[in-house]
Image (cartoon, rainbow, N blue to C red; front, side):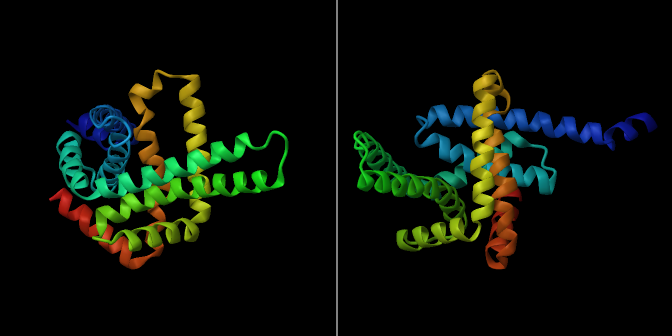
Length: 221
């Protein structure tokens, strides 16, 4: 019994326990993404993964399956509008990027600056999309307020946003080198990255952090 208690309280046990939950979370996220036809399913699964990870990390939650689907049900009710609007916006920006890129032959300064502006807006919008998903899960906002606060968070937490983008590139590169990791940690690693870079930055905004904690408490009960 003493050996068992020592093992349960060891760092190795907590690490393996978290790793098991992390892998299980990834499988649930893959299923959600596929059922949601990727375009809708992927953002939903990542947001659900972020909130679930926070409960696992802060609360030591054990029932990952139950918590994930309870969170998923909550997220589905609140995030569809945000996903549709941001996906359309990203599609428009992607079209503009392609259009101005094709105009660079022969080189043209107008097309070059337009291409760079569209590319910058696309990158900022990706980060704002994530903030928008988090905000839509916390508050009931109009589209105007959602856009405004999403982009303000991207600018206010710009360093964290840059770290997130660099981390995302590293994850994508690693998954391309070792594709089998997609099954085990491919999607949950993005949720962990968002949690450790972007959402931890909310602690600097008391009202936002307290509202997020309130939602987490509600979901965990």
